[in-house]
Length: 473
Image (cartoon, rainbow, N blue to C red; front, side):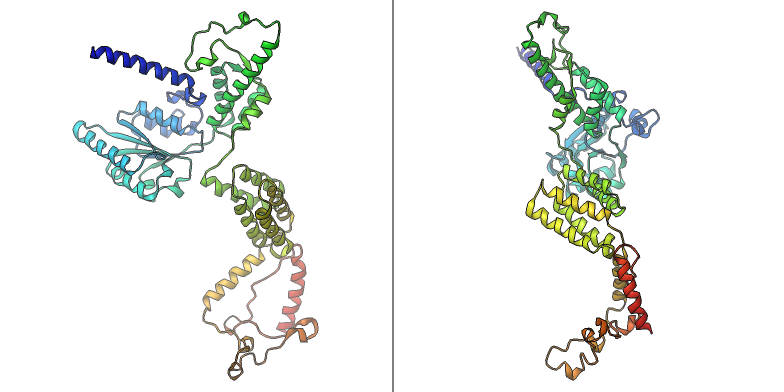
């Protein structure tokens, strides 16, 4: 009787698994089961590549898999689970806490002592663990109690403890290349009983941005849109005859899903892809936050407004805080344009104020205005260099007193100290200039600001050369 109950439970469990598999997202249904089924990452998984050699020999030591979303980190971990002779334990840092990790480590200790069997702990989204939580793993990894494999989309040098990083091998996964995405699109279309021409496939690939999961989501949605459109068209057609459906009577394929049986093939159009792609919003991680911000600043510094607008668009599309972008542009206005175009700071400041006043999406125009103005402006970093040189002297002579004639005389008793005595008021002289010292003796004669010949700074250069020449004479 008991065995009969267990048998019934097994049957129902198997049916439930089959039902879930049929309804799973396309990316889950097409998840690779072997290294040869993996798409992309040839630098790690190709014949003779380091990671493949370690996996096939079951010699993988603690490692960090770092790569963008949809590059295959979790799929690779699942394949590792089938290849290792150690007990494979998978956890997600999103839902697991320190208590869960400690429990796994205790089980690993018992397993090793009782059976001599090792444990491979896969921790997905490991960057979600704070430093204290990561420290729980450190001793176990250091002693070899577990082989730790972490997956992260964020730069591990920013997010992981240095001791944990030093005990792990870093494997960087790259965004999927065009040919890899084309292969994924082919597999996805076949699983969805759909087809498209080369131009539409190219549109799918371009919309994915190297993200395999995003590509398969687009394929799945586009195929369903094509199915709905063509079914509606066929039902309106008086010549439609379901008996002519070439897929009628096809055997059920769990990978395709029940709703696709006896259907298709569905012809996916570019409009289907565009509508499907609009449902996803491109994002990037913390490391790309800094990389793309750097690309924006360097493009504007390099006087390329087109590249500046491209990187600005990437940042706004990814949901970057527009105030962060505005602050960087305000800094750039003084750091890289400076006196070559004094209005640059005004434009950048106005854009920053507009972000708060107007808000997105309209404020993107104000940011674009600032990017174009700053990129097209003549460039000079002489203000930046002058400040650095002056700061170095200020640190070296931090105890230097202001010359007596420059000291404040606006309080009782100042005249008894001779403060302000001998000061010459420039506006009383022709040209509003007088020959008097403004620096302390310790740095007398120092010249920090040396204007370039770029833009408006040329005017400042001519005037200052004249005044400095008169002072030296």
